[in-house]
Amino acid sequence: MPRLHSQKRRFQKEKQLDGKKRVAIAIPASIVSDTPHLREKTAKIGYIARAAAIFRVDEIIVYADNLKANQKRDLEFVSLLLRYLETPQYLRKRLFELKPELQFAGILPPLRTPHHPQQGKSRVLKVGDYREGVITSKTENSAQVDIGVEKTAVLRNYQGELNQRITFKIIKAKTDQIEVQEASKAEVAEYWGYAVSVEARPFRNWIEDRKFDLAVGTSKLAPRFQGLASALASRWHKANRILLLFGAPARGLFDIAEDEGVRLEALVDFVLNTVPDQGTETVRTEEALLATLAIFNEHFTI
Image 1 (tube, helix red, strand yellow):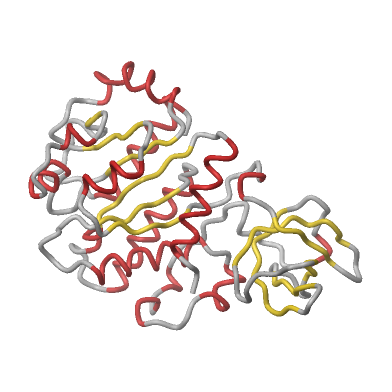
Image 2 (image 1 turned 90 degrees about the vertical axis):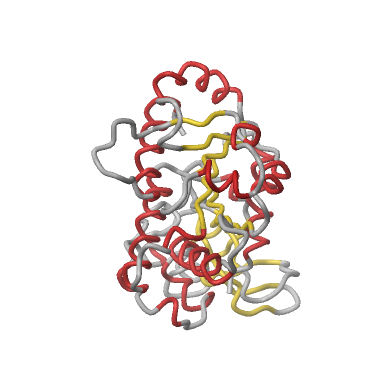
């Protein structure tokens, strides 16, 4: 299986190297608690992954929103589905074991991001292209890499482990041999997917430890976005590491923070309402996520 913490570390390292603005979203483990059937739970996670990919989110944090309950199963389920969806289709069988939680993976929508290429023929490869790949075998001097075409590519001087997912750059694309070199995700100009991380710690611990330049919470109890747009814009343009935080189906961020004995306003820089005057009793987390990302994308460019 993909190594969750190594994926998180890769994301953190790259965001320090290239100086680009990085946006993380945090969703609760209980986001699937109001959905009884595994098929519908799976579909909901697909909706979230698509929203994240559409608006070029760099990291999805799945957090424990009820410390009095054992949410380990929900944390693992949500993160598993998100990682499965982010992985290019041609690598999924290599990286994921058959699990009951993936029973309805077939209904998940394709992300259609640049790192999920539709073409699986070596003839379409060009020098300078990037592909996600997995080390399938190695010798003393080289390794074979599955990059999603009909033949494996060659990687010189690889000293790592087998079955590692790595970003590669094509450096030779001749018909008789494909050769690649390891690349950083930060090198790729296009959107190259999101990392997934899990936080089972209390709110205050992980938000403070991650030291975001700007943290924004969303709530129907907060002031309207329009009233805070100017102040938020000033902070947004100066920030490199941004967190957008979303509440749970049954409890909002104010409730979650109160249960942990902390004021939400003390943890984040802004709390705002991106769906004011809602016509329904509740706005689901995945709906608030899509609405918020659309608004921020239009106003600030994510």
